Length: 165
Image (cartoon, rainbow, N blue to C red; front, side, top):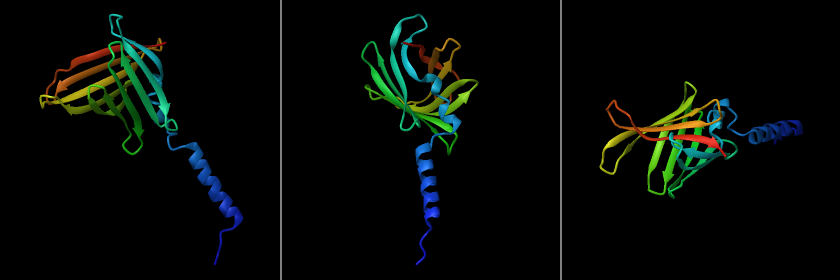
């Protein structure tokens, strides 16, 4: 019976430890959403406080987590991850009203833009588009739009300005 030599075993162990310790999420695309990381106060364009959002990296820096709460008590969370196999970002959003959004996309012209289809309570198919655009003053503008599938006109559901606090 042939056994691997000690140097061969050490080489294999070092390779496995290096791969394990380095993590699977080292591609630079995993940092595409890092501009959104932080503790944020969210206001509407007229300056009214809409809520607060905590954005952090988790799971070995592979996932961006979001925990949002409005001043009126609505709250929700999202998990965001870059998929190396598709080259796209994915967001799964859920909130206390039962809303679930599944969005996919990536960076376009400096903004993260994610889209996805859903069905309303009335059974209508709609498309959601949410963009996050970093600003030079370190704020982020989030623009959430919706339209009926196969129509041209987008309707703004929410526009928020994120400032670090």
